[in-house]
Length: 380
Image 1 (tube, rainbow, N blue to C red):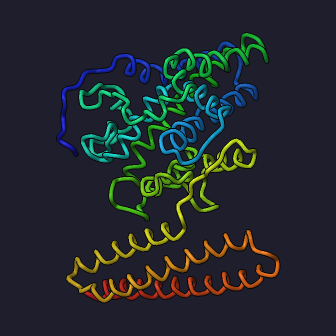
Image 2 (image 1 turned 90 degrees about the horizontal axis):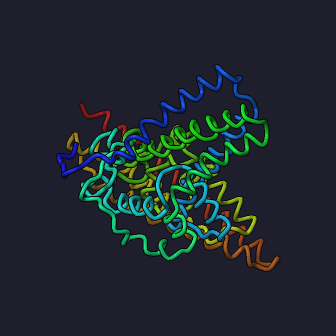
Image 3 (image 1 turned 180 degrees about the vertical axis):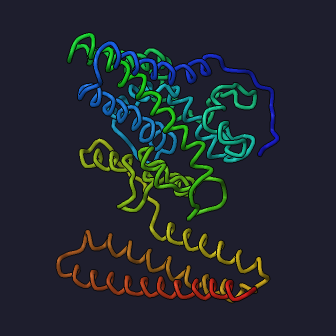
């Protein structure tokens, strides 16, 4: 736990808002159910629609697009993220991204606005409830965002836009669809309840994703990968991958990883509204995984004073061979896309041969790690 304790004061606006919204949501659910009727399909659809609109505006818009520039988006999507991101009531794009860039620059240190080293509750929401002199923001690290007219407009009018998209709009739609009773139901479910879910989904990435999970790519900081968090947070739970490869538009890089934010970006790329999707080369990902696996296994052997130099030499050789194979496969696939029909067969054959070599390297690495683990177990 960090001993850093700068002078602080309570941010009463944030404190009252974050404490009162869950209470109001519970009271609203009880009163609506008691005096009108049980929520129906309209309330369910309104909850899900605004949950996804506001949630994805944070994960895709605020996070992957604006904070990390992992892809480019056309102005209609920038406007969408600005409007519905405001409805998530997590501050403006400029404020949010400035904090987030500082978080990545100084993860787990005293300069990290929501450092997990200061405890779960501080990183979850405590940091929002107080104002610390250290984190008075001059937005010097988001000048690229301040220059965007839509983003600057959102920053100037954040509370008005948020009130409209997050509260007034679901209520108004409910009234148009079913009158007063439905309007109140949509205010409760599409507004208050949805807001609490989106809030704490985002907060879990700052807190739980730095405490529980695995670290398959790096131990440079406390970030963790968790399928369950990914399932709850539009794919943001693959957090160790994200901290290791921040510019990647994906958090779940495998096709089967649950990452709705990645799917959303891919869908709008097909529609021509997103471009320049940045992906970490496979050889970089696999080498990072290999290095981490070797580091963890080697540390176990070193704890029993077992010499690991011979294994280091072997892994070094395999690492370079693996990197070379994956790079050659990537290069050959690019050639295949532009190859003439007469050339494509030979290129495919070359890819198949390289893949065979790569699979052999993986098999040999499995044997190597088995040897290391067996040696560890054999030493009392």
